[in-house]
Image 1 (cartoon, one colour):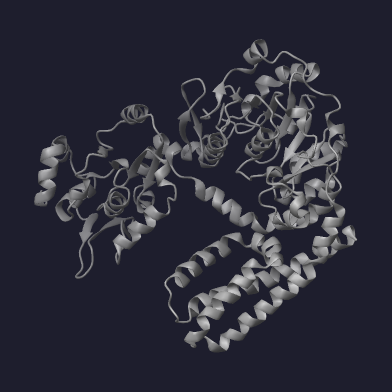
Image 2 (cartoon, rainbow, N blue to C red):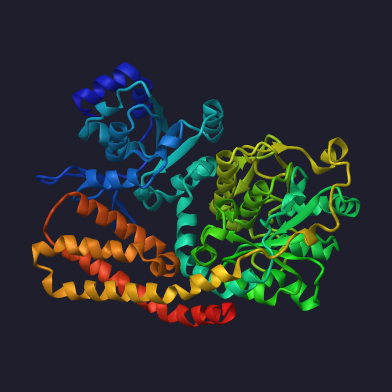
Length: 604
């Protein structure tokens, strides 16, 4: 083995034990399967032949640029204490990381010794000669228990950054690693994709629900003190909910706390005839109506619904009981119509699950303590849901093959429990809101559930013996909620839409007129002025921006970047993209016009 001189000195000086591994362990792949590819004028890369297909672990053309993209995808690296890289390859992404985060501690897990050998022979890794580099870890010497010990020893906020090509090239290594480190992977792409897919739904639901919003009380009206310093329970649909049915029944019968069901848990409660004080709903998709099918078909009217303004209109329209609402952060429609009569304190941020949004709302309402029941955020007894649920995974055991993609996270009892990316995403979301809002009064009673940082764990039975003893529920709490929106203001805002729409179309026409002058350098400033006119237009912001947030943010970012360089040259490619974006927005106008007309009719 012919190492580069700098690499040999580094290994001898700081990692002598690596020599023993490289010399005693046989190569894991047959000769010729993995090779370094070098081309004139290009950085080296590694190619790996698998089932007749050639895979490249780094870009063949510009691995440094690719490395920047890999690291830049993680927007919140500064929030983490330690980074673990899965897959080192030739180290381009780690080198970029060390240059941009020089003080951040990190470790490297390389599952393929052949690749590490090739790296030492072909690329200088002197960038790892720093005090904040923890160590190398290799699958051949790092057993599952050793890795778990490593994690326990770190006891800090960890982020895993995998080299994307390794998931495809070495799927078994990737799965084995993720079973241990899965909780530290970044799952924000799940939330981002959900947000992108639901953009138009949020606006359409807000438009369809606005009549119900005008005619139902907000839970944040002038007298919202019914929950102030009162215990409130969020009941979720995890398998552990079944253990708490009798405790919940006792609490309800004796008025010891307000009980609220989040999403699917209402079905388990109905099955056991424990009626919560209200259901909470935020799901924007029409199929979420099936959650309330039992209530609808049985005509149960005694349980009110507290719905987010962007909740699926099919749920709101068909719900048999009383309706109360709150305005969500995704709802720019209601914020337009209600104007200054709506304070920022009445707007509830959106999150990945209804339980997290309910937690935020109850925190704003001053409930204390807030008690979590059935919030497993993990699989228990090979199940996803509690009894009484007959859709999605249902209440039955899930086929063991499904758990191939699951991994372990700490459990409330000190052990470990299996979860998946979606449930882990919900957990992280809840933890971040608890941290960001400074919540110190959240008690998790979920037996066998995932550990939720920021909460204290206590079984519900013990909590009843310890502190939840007094009758605190006001039987007339609903009577204190009333409609409080200014109808005259809503009418005024509705009337103001027409001139704003006319301004929007004038700006669009000016934009289209520029299409014949894309080679005129003097028109670049005019292009940016028209863009600002459109972005600042109230009609656009309330109804079109909210339906196209993701694309609009990308465009604005690129526009600022281009405009900030001070070039007079007309940005032709940017112009074409913006024209396409505006045309897509105009298609959305045709969809929302009947809904706007209906609102105008209602307020008139």
